[in-house]
Length: 340
Image 1 (cartoon, rainbow, N blue to C red):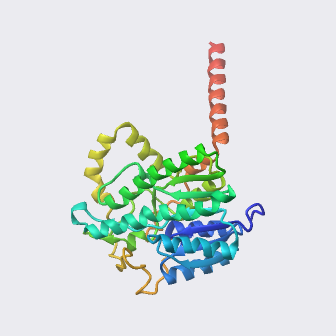
Image 2 (cartoon, rainbow, N blue to C red):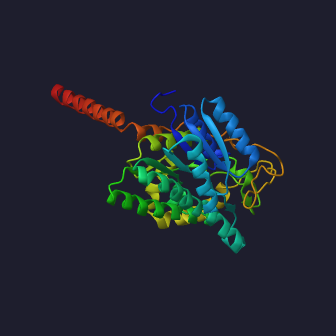
Image 3 (cartoon, rainbow, N blue to C red):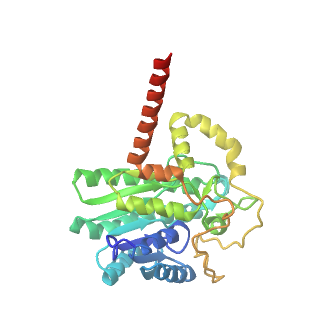
């Protein structure tokens, strides 16, 4: 536990499961005071137990992030309990796995209100408190899908694209004002979270992340680093994220056709159909009384680390190693020439 971060006040939305839960635990391991925002009681109760077991202080605040009044009230409750908010992390979302033609207007609206406007309302609540103090950091948890849309996830991709544009605009405004409040974004790969068991799905087979799949702790590591180093506009987690964004920048049309051929199959698998507790309108843990935790159904496939993430956090080491290798190669070549 770092004494530098002990007592840091952190708010995490979507904290009952998946990346939000893993992120809350990562902050807790440093002795943070963590306000946990989500809808489901069982998930929140489980997150409180986990945060306290890791050495943090927890406060569960039942919140539907699509309601700005609830988000504002949650921020006020967090500060009354813990003091000024240092870091606000927006994670909460819902989605639909379906072809667009099968999605109802009310369903699409609901995804947008939670997965996009929930970030806007969270950011507003944070800035209402951070700007007068001229201090604080907001981390937007994004996705490679903030840049690259894929089939069967039009609602989610639309929300992530919207967050990306919102983030860029807001960052420009904060830079213009020379504010000491910072906002950064972390673009995620496919992650082993419970969303694939609880998101509303109309697919013929169970939904899965697009491989390669990473454990949620890898994602949380990226969020933690971004919160500590918020001057960079965004971070990428996972080699697949870097590869996808690079390919989309170079040849988006080719990627359209590739995903048209592969995107349906790669997002479905043959595992037994999970108990469907779609969280679009109600928390997934409600009727079942189930705590989904941070991990989903893909522990046997998920990667526990990402070299790309490590490299992005250690530019100096990587650059020095590359320069060293280049120097060694040049010396070897020079020596070989001298012997000829």
